[in-house]
Amino acid sequence: MFALADMLRIDELKLIACKKFERQLEQHWISDTLPDCIREVYSTTNDIDSNSMRIAVVNTVAFRKDVLVQKGPVQDLIREAGDFAVDLVLKIAGNSSGRG
Image (tube, rainbow, N blue to C red; front, side, top):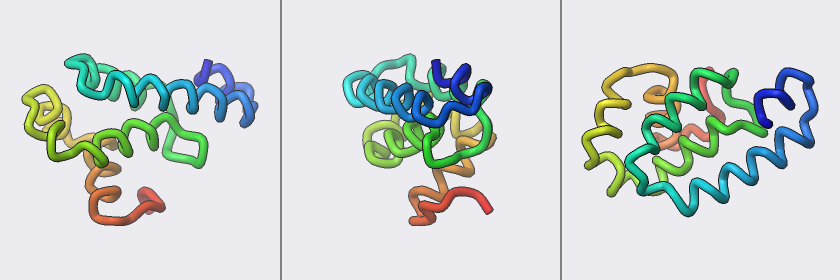
């Protein structure tokens, strides 16, 4: 739903989709499939914006970094050093505005 709303530039629908996604992340953040979910988000969305699923996954990992970065699959994802790794480091460093 988010990708379609983004393609059609329907910001309210993007916001609704992102909120639903955030609720799912709150319940399933510990799942072993989280790294695959993050890969999917980053391969199907554009840069971080105010209604971004990227923000949702970055915030989820940053908020629970003490647990999540200990997991091998999350470490593998970070080692890939793509946009997610950059966004996560910026978030943890306190740069909430995203990449420059």
